[in-house]
Image (tube, rainbow, N blue to C red; front, side, top):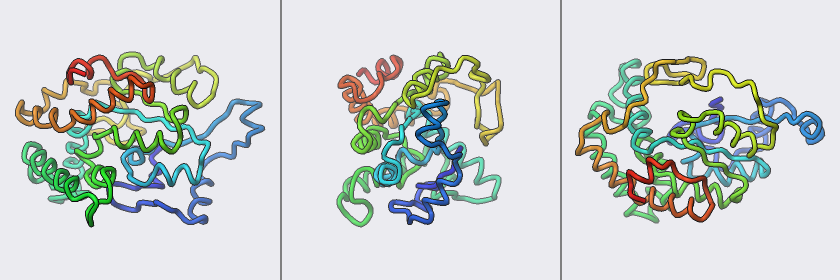
Length: 270
């Protein structure tokens, strides 16, 4: 998990066109699974990196290196994801005694930061094409707290590269409620047989204050994101993400991505 090869974090170490030697080193991190071994045993290999979906050049870079790869996008409620990212950045800023971390001015506090970030993203969008960004996806990429929750443009680019059949979208909303069903969906997508001995499927990993993929939290909070911020701030974010949510619903209706959670459809009146 979290190899972060194609995009390390935010605007750091992006590999839009990685050299052959670096790709070879990347491939050595995985077990050798030949087509013959896959046919005989069903074994597959892969990685999970949260920074790839919003990366403006990763779809093309990944396709160029591994055109047969099956892509899985696990999406969280966009406002909840943005808030969670800010909380995480605040945690590490305090840990390392910094006012800013990964270009995130956590000293502002959440409410002020939302105003600041919406303004910055708006300026970036208005400047396209320009020195700040040549397309919408670059604006999304450059703002990892709020921007990375604008899912639609990123999904469209991954689908453009890998095709509808190459990209499977699932949602943490469904993963929380019926984890085995979501896992079976992923298994079908990557072409492996159904696993019947799932473990820890109701355990939260990398939870707030317990960051890291080997740290479990059986009592992690899954509260409604409205309870985590002021009503005016939530309403700003609701409006901010509405265009992306409308586009995602259109994509779902066309069969390009999985159906959105009913709660999302109801909340954004899709």
